[in-house]
Amino acid sequence: MVRRVLVSGAWALLLLVSAPLTARSLTLDAIKTMPESIEKDYRIWRYLTSGHCTKRDAETLIRQARRINTKLAKAYRHITGHRPPKRTHHRPHPLTPAQRAKNARNKALVRSLLASKHPLADWQRLDPAQQLYLFNRLGRHGRKRLDHALDRNTFARLSTVRGFDTAIQHILRERPPKLLASLHLLPDAHHRMRYETLMQVGFFNLLQERPRIAERYFDLAIRATNRRDQRDRALFWAYKSHRNRRYLDRLLSSYDLSIYTLAARDIAHQKYPKTITPKLPKTQRLDRAIYDPIFWAKLKRKIFDKKTDLKALATHYRSAEAVGYYTYILSKASRETQHYFPMPYRDLLERLPKSRQAILYAIARQESHFVPASVSASFALGMMQIMPFLVDHLAKQQHEKIDYDAMFDPRTALRYANEHMNYLTRWLQHPLFIAYAYNAGIGYTRRLIRRRHLFAGHGAYEPFLSLERVDNAQARLYGKHVLTNYVIYMNKLGVPLRLSDLLATLHRPEKTDKFRKRKHHE
Figure 1 (cartoon, rainbow, N blue to C red):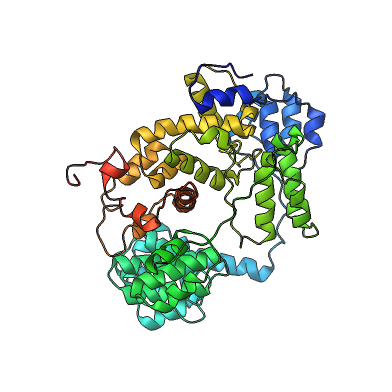
Figure 2 (figure 1 turned 60 degrees about the vertical axis):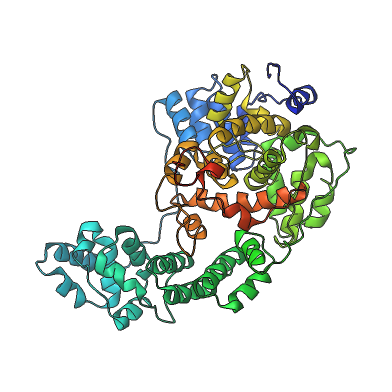
């Protein structure tokens, strides 16, 4: 149980009305009956670290885990002294004699090319499929010896062959100068490049001041995906590259909600799209099973069962207590075309500054869709997805003893998230940087924003290009989503805010953070 301590304001009220959860008494038999899921993995981990798990129990349970993450592996090794057994997979079909012979020839070619005194000439004599096979398997040093300027026809021909996308990724990462300079060329109409690679080549050409070439790549990216969010991103950058109004018009008609659709409405001086904040009754009392991650694992199976009537299912959770389940199910029922922005726990949050309310709501929506029993693959817990090590740290700071399952009580999760936010906002003021720190850590964020080429305010495509150049892919996407949520929530809280105004301050440390030098900005 949580030891109650003296706190002020709304958070004192929280401790009075909240009944924090404690870890349930788990048994081996109970865990065996749970559906295979990340949530079950979490329960297995709790059992392994309970202090009463035997070696035999550990060997039985580890085979039931869906995914063995580092926490499970460490707990298993602590009990047994061994690494977890590898999960068995279906064996691939045996290779035919012709396939084995082909593989042997390709391996011989790799060895021959690595030993060659004239590797480029030998490589150029091969057919395109062999060229790409070798290029992708030679390693950084071997590829360096193949650095040369590609002509238009060679580039187009190679782009139609399997492995070209991987080759482009190697070039972008390793930056051989002559091959890198060849990325101003365009692929064949039947190219094999994937969406993200097309976007990366587009950004490279923007940085090389070739906006027309960048536009062509972004246009190819639009056609390479069926996902609305990816298409909107490519539409935005195609417009930014050459200011062609047809891209902006298509973006303005999108049903998706993102920094790209908000930015398009800022450019066109249009209102932001309507979003839904349901007002739900407080009278319906639901079973406290809604705070159990195994309940959520079972409910997800229903939600993703094609036979389920989602709108009918949502009515079972039409309650303020279960607003996360209710809005999540309805969002899936609309195929993400309707955007729900719940604002629960007003009694706890309304005394906080509106900017703090907005960032907590923005993060909760992105982390868990306000589902209280959420568990991530790395065992981040609850509505605010707080990692166990951070729970320990925050509990120690507040002189509390708390069970990890208490994070499944949304009120406790909000209190802990707010305490963590108190620390983050000592150093960071901008919601984008706060989002990066919440997701990837404040140390990573400090290193990121101190890089001279990011968020410096220079260039025709800033700060959007800096947003795309964040090297942590998860944090990059997370920051964009939280920023979108923050703008919507600030407006819902009665604070008129446009995305463009928020982005305009990113290069000014006096407005955003305490990590960068300020003398040039004050």
